[in-house]
Image (cartoon, rainbow, N blue to C red):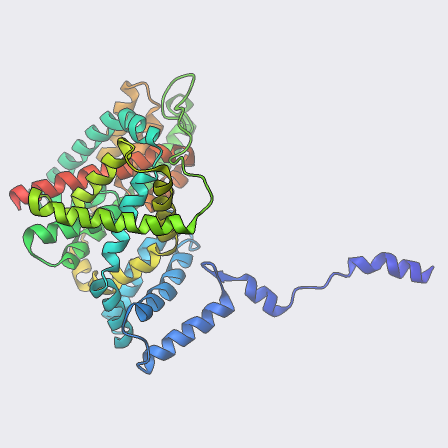
Length: 444
């Protein structure tokens, strides 16, 4: 009997996980903590002893190890995680480390080679522009833009007018307010907006792209924080007055929006097609640079226009679109925070940022976003849309791109609006980049 009792109770004595197993379950991004510590130690030691390769290998090692940590912390720290924390940390922490001379010169050299000499920045922009546009659901691209056109256009105009007027009140010139505060906020994010803008501004003015990046990024970050706060307030309004919200449905109709996905590409990843996607992304960039010689329009703008036309007229074979989209998903998922680290180290001098970000600057940024959200609310009300949802989607035009969309829709519990948010961010942002570039060429 005793033996039987022992046999019965034996399965209950489960082995507890060891200390190492518990430690291994903690991750920094996708990497287990013990492995991350080992990799970080190797990279740090190599940089201290000047054995870090001063090329793409060393550069990727530095930005990847820092980017994973910054992205992971940004998604876990309370409050910060709800306002685009990963982007904020990945940009500002490296900038602070450089300011206090805490990054080894060999690490800085390797990152400089990667970001500037090897033009990783341009490659990232090309992949994001090509993949994000070619991967969009064509129905969303056309119908979503049709439905969002009036709130988006009026919201954009209101934000420009409000931003410039408030900027003038605080002593900013209209030109500076428009090109360096308003446009960065409504340009579609950092990767799809500010970076192409910086290239275009540099091409027009003859200056360095990095100087424009450091001037524009603070506006985008502040604008995203204000947009997240506005989205949360809109959600509260919808809870208090249910008749004003569709709880994630934009159009007032029996059928709803009839758009459930921002992309139709749901096939498994094919690595050979991703290779073709890389070729397509590079070719779009080369096309833009080449066509610039004949049209006089900056290359990044022509790249966006070309990708949009190819998608609308279905010129590209579906398999090639799949490859470009999957490459975009890989790059945007794995390399965005590392890229931000590189930008923070090289393109965002902390002294300049501190000079730029004043109380007046923050108020101008807030005016841009609040006017856009308010316009979306009232225009949506008159267009048989749910005003709360229309305001939230319009507000996505003033975020940090895809990252901003997630932060804004998460704050308002409206993730089902993502297809329309993508329209506001991508097409609204691309249109802003094109228009701002043409205006800069005329008045710059």
